[in-house]
Image (cartoon, rainbow, N blue to C red; front, side):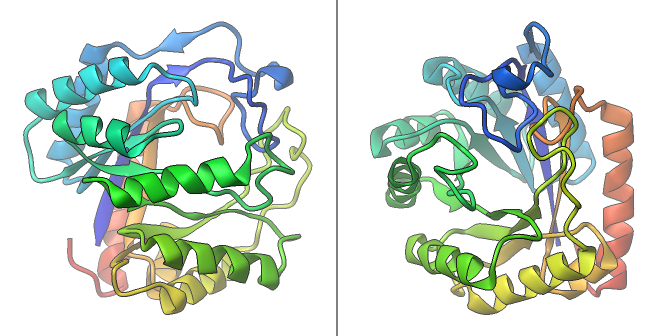
Amino acid sequence: GYIWGAVGIDNVPCAMDCSFCSLGSKWGIVKGEHIISDEEVLDIARTYVMKGASFITLRTTEFFDLDRLCELARFVYEGAPGDYDLVVNTGELTVEQANALYDCGVRVAYHVLRLREGEDTPFDPEVRKATMRSIAASKLRLATNLEPVAAWHTGEELADRLEFLNEVRPYICGAGELWPVPGTPFENSVRTPVERMCQVVAVVRLCMSCDTPILCGPKTQEGFSSGANLACLDIGANPRDTTMRGRSENLQIIGDAKTAFAEAGYRL
């Protein structure tokens, strides 16, 4: 089992206005700009290391300056030594940009072709695919997900997306649900039942290549018994929340996840 700890660095309005994202400027949820300082990011990273995280993710909005991200990655990599992989979750990347991040200590890049990309988002699906292929062709390892899964997504849609995910052979995959964030177009949507999410996780596990040994899903004994072996948590800005996520309540989730891992027969 693995723990994935993310740091949402910039809580700022994003002009892309994805229908399921709290950071969309059109929704007016985020007032002003709040960017976590480098020192606070480093302190959170050190805490994640102490709690046994296998992955520490620097998550930014789409247009966060790449040179600035490289500087921050190097700062964290050098200041928080430990047995973990440093991850970035940011905007579009070329092979050269991905390799530049590798040179700064990053080892994994997270990027997703979302379900109904181009419909529920303004992104060009081909651009998203190009970035994922660039990451896969670089020195970095690719992390991705089948998301955001909602009740109205058909089995055919999920299967079509899985075909592409197998093409790029990610190191980390999984399934994540669509959250009905208040103030967004999907605020009145019903959450996907946990049984359905566990079913999707199980199908992802069965369909993905052996090149994908790590899978995220519900942070419960049921989720881990369905094939997930990665528990994800967030501190700071989060597209699935209307406020910055605090440290104490999210670090507490690590203990619950470790218990669920043990119940499902995993070791950390």
